[in-house]
Amino acid sequence: MFLRQTAAWFEMFVTAGLLLALPLQSLDAKPLPGELAGTERTVRLNPASPWQLQLADDRCRLARRFESTKGPGMVLIEQIAPGQRFDLTIAGPDFARARRGNWFYGGMRSDLEMVTINPLEYEIAGYDNAILLGGISIDDDLSPEEDRQSRVAAVDPAAADLVERIVLQRSTTIVSFETGNMKAPLEALNACSHDLLLEWGLDAEAHSTYHRPPKMPDERLYFRRLHHKLTSTPGNEGHKSLLRVRAIVTSEGSVTNCHHEYALSSGGLEPDVCQDIKDMQFDPATDRDGKPMASVYSLSLTLSQYDPWTADAHGGRWGSD
Image 1 (spheres, rainbow, N blue to C red):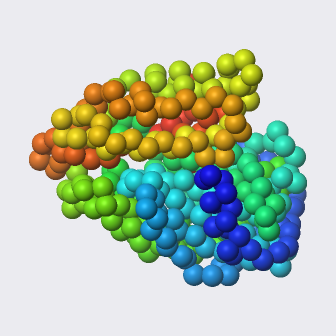
Image 2: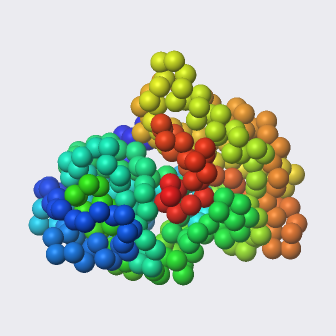
Image 3: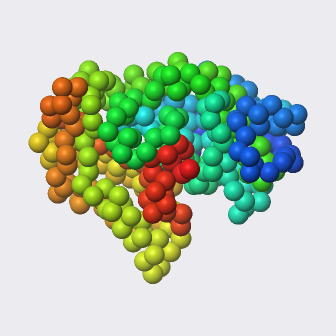
């Protein structure tokens, strides 16, 4: 269902064409995004529409269509709850032409080097190829503990102010989506996501300054075991999906509502994680004064042969560095 909905969303902006591949030096030095974007033959995709913000029943989407002399592109930023992380879908017809098995790199902030990414790859009509990155951050050098304990109320406007483009490289294929400054668009996404809190009966104002989000007990262990189960069970090897989880947690730490989805799932075993989460006792969120408050827990986690939990990568920029 999610794949069909996302594909339909993209098809509203379809044009036609191809992106250009080009040779470039090794990324061992990890250049800045602007350095790659400035190379002579890099394909630069320019905006072909304004940013379009959509408030759905349970999520916020920020989308924009792009174009170049070689073909169209699309950027979709999505949140199922407020926070400094978001899911990023990028569409363009040339990603699959790069040699598979090569490292995939991405970068957004002008002051931070390109990093290795591990996206889910699929196809969308009119673009042919798309990638989905779950739970990425544009903040700098966040550890999992810092990510759970502070700076989580929204995407940081100061960090967004340092984003002028999204650059991807795979093998000799390099594309740069010239988004322009992202502070205003991501502030609009923040406002939309906080409106979701009102829909769920939560205190949006308290969330803008809260001290700590709710904490799931043994979170890393639980999802590490889930990952192993999904990718190692006979008949289910090679499973790929983006697991999204959202739970409303009371000031006492109990779960009153839970939603989960396996986006872009390759099929097979898909455990109902909400059955487990509803029985868990969370550490509740705390407000700016340290008092417990009702809040929302959310997570986007890529499930594939690459295990970000075992690699201690969850919590880093782009969700995979």
